[in-house]
Image (cartoon, rainbow, N blue to C red; front, top):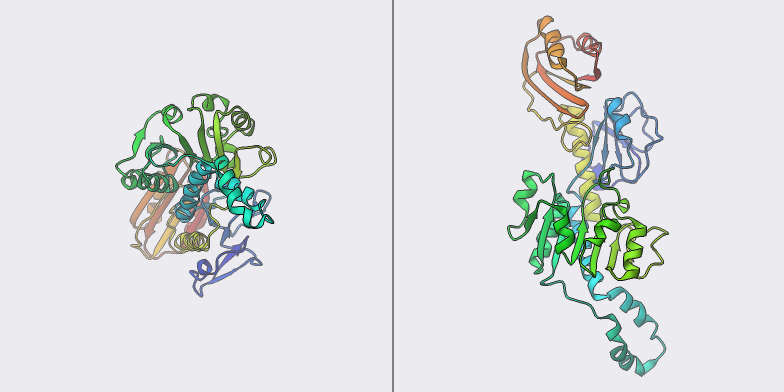
Length: 386
């Protein structure tokens, strides 16, 4: 019997992925796995039993990644599960940044009470809310992951010329990107060429304040900037100054903050990017499947702190070892198993940064003794035998 702790209200369809081998709920103690959405876990003390945390969403800023790595806890996210929901809102953002629909609707509400004169007042006042079409304009997409590629492709179909930038472009993303999009190697070309810029990168030390006074100065006059990724990617002081000067025509963000809410030209959406029932179902289901495959088979897919390692089962027992990425670790592990007279039927080892993961399929043996012997190797963080 396995235990899964939930830290938020998780989609019912996602939790239905767990079969009767699992006990799931927010009151679960000594859990084997956990699913979380937005709950902050930085101050949470994790039990020694915890093997993995799955974030039902893409961002993992609410999870103490390094501490989890040190404790041998795999952290998963669900890239792409909410991509369509975010893509649709980005396309809406493109349109409302141009056509001044929001301010036009608010103005129309003020006409209430004017009876038969409303029609005439609309025709007289609508000129204040004109704006350009997006067809034929240029869109720069910074970050070509699951969401960025879908945005680029949708914008292509709407008649926009699309430039994409991503120094870490994956083969999968490259295959999915519409052939009409232009891949840019220098981010400065995005700033120089594009009428609209949308950002789809994680928030890291290197991407914080990616849009700042210096990068805005490189942009076209009247550029429109969209941020549906993370609030910290855009410097609030810089965007306010650019809106006030007219350098930036509009800033659409899914991350309202007190500093920008009173600024003309800011369209602040209350973090609705992934707020669809379909997205919540997809994220929860993917998170549950990731936990199940890791708990029952040791396979790691979509981890943010450990390498991707998957292997079909070929032995009675599977040895799963999380360890430091230091010399001779694999030799020590396999040597110990060989010295015990155990045949290794299959093996896979990969590393990611300071950490590595080794899976070995072996014959039926005394697992507790072997587990203790491997755990005693210097540099080993956590051992499981499934």
